[in-house]
Length: 561
Image 1 (tube, rainbow, N blue to C red):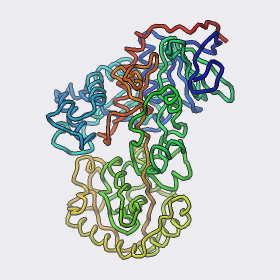
Image 2 (image 1 turned 90 degrees about the vertical axis):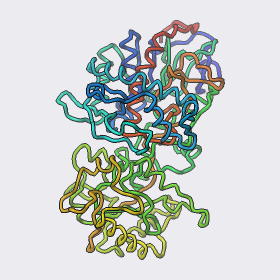
Image 3 (image 1 turned 45 degrees about the vertical axis):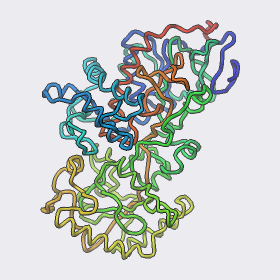
Image 4 (image 1 turned 180 degrees about the vertical axis):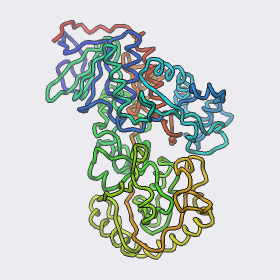
């Protein structure tokens, strides 16, 4: 740590310092986490300045689906449908930490801090969401058929916990309108929002309390005084090549987080001596490999494998996963290690569909776009969708594309017997489609798969709506899928007031954290749709209660720039 004037991540103020801005609370980041925290803090009478690294507000939240997992939400209460506290926590522990889970143990086997954060979420979610709705800052509708992602006995309520964001006309919307509405409310309460301000450091006073931040704005240093607290809601590190290499071991090929999510908090936390947790973890979703390599800011991960006459195979031409299972769990299939060959045979997977699925399941509408459907809209083409008149021709197209991608794919190529295995795989899949039972991966048997499938497609009169035989005649199409990160889920640990904790489990005075820049209590799981937005809206509500109780911290400096 250096004295004032330094460009180090942490600067200790030892004398007078001129400030460009001075408020009670500085919130770093304008996604759903930052907006919830800022809104609730303003509602409680504090002054707030939000600093956004990007050119527009919203970060990853602006292109998210805006569904939210809300335990004991008002819709369930109105329907008098139970969502008991212990059952809810037990279910999250079971799927989040299956190797630690203990049905009769303290905290159900979870680390205590994870248990306490889940408790905090459950206990405060109804009030947090009711307040947002009553204030008009967010509008919701119930999604009663949306099921949880893992069907286990511990889950006593598999549907009804998810709510969707709507606009004033009652139409379901994605994150962009939600963020815009919240920002309007924040500004209406006197909050200020500055874009193109990347926070690169914090200021401490002589008592080692956080009293402000330093930001870069178009090459100029901006110093912002925080009388009471600084809140980091700045997202994870998906797009930092350095941190992804150091912490994720090359397992995730980019992701669909905002391009500005580069782990800006990490060097600050390290300089403060704050330990980092779960840095190897991410909210996973397969994505189009080549689109990720192109660093396309519009990239949406493949949240749902659309269609019924389609399957995915690895480099050996065999299926390795239920294509209809949920995105986070499907991502794990990419990481299977073959010690004999010393390779990840499933790292790249090849989604193969026929003309029927190409025709019946094109990308259309908001929901389909948010699902990351790789099948282009009617009348459009995609550079990421390969075509072959026969399976042999399609295999040739895939391998030629892999040859071109060799320098950035680790040299993945199709096995010499890929085509023969693919034909056998298709024949086996077609038999399952006719019988209605996928004997290998049980495709189409879970509630969430059937919900996403939406019933039988045109011409599918077979027993399983999620399966239909791949056509005997081409053309056929293929897309290359790789494991991607919706966003990382590692960072400092926080307590139940969302205060950042140091290595002795003591709150760092004046420092709070919310969202994907903090360590998640979710373990390996993605519990269901809205697993990030639901807790984060709640945690912003909870953090605000403590923030406004923070004392004004002295700096020895009073002059404004």
